[in-house]
Amino acid sequence: MIKSEFIKQLIGGPSDFGIGWVIILISSVITVLVASINFLKWLNQKIQIKQNWLRKISLLALGTPIDYFKTLLGNPTFINRVGNYDELIFINYYFYVQALIDKSKKVILYSVTNRTKRFNPILNLAGFKISLGKTKFFEVGEPEKIFVHPGNHGSISTYSEIHYY
Image (spheres, rainbow, N blue to C red):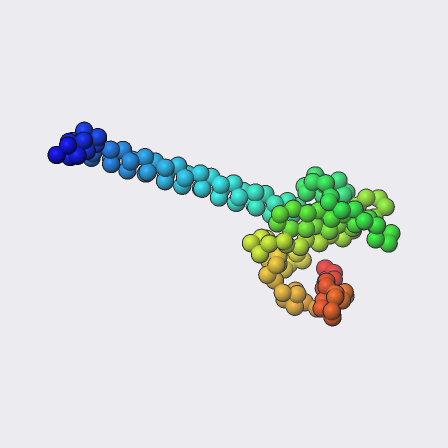
């Protein structure tokens, strides 16, 4: 008897017990809604960042001053001397950009290489729609030149093709 009276006193009557469960249920729904809203904000932010990088890639062009590339992509991570040219490598989460510049600091060649399978921008180049990381080399015609650099133990370290349009 004493035990049941103590429990009634602790949790109150049936209406007090029901009110407690309603409060728990409402707070759980609010928590789920806040988490969902935060997830959607995060997802939207990720999509906007990716779209911003896609736009910047589409603005790259040959013959532009390297400062234009720096404005779009930030400072290069690496700068190397390759023959008579300077090579600048820009790196971010989604892709690499390699740019070769001449003595007048104009871009004479650039390439974009994706770093993640989830970044596949569609680039319009010389009438071809190329999906970065998906379009196969043979789909854009025969190359003018092919470069293969061997890696360790007979594997291919790098492979690239040159297409002039």
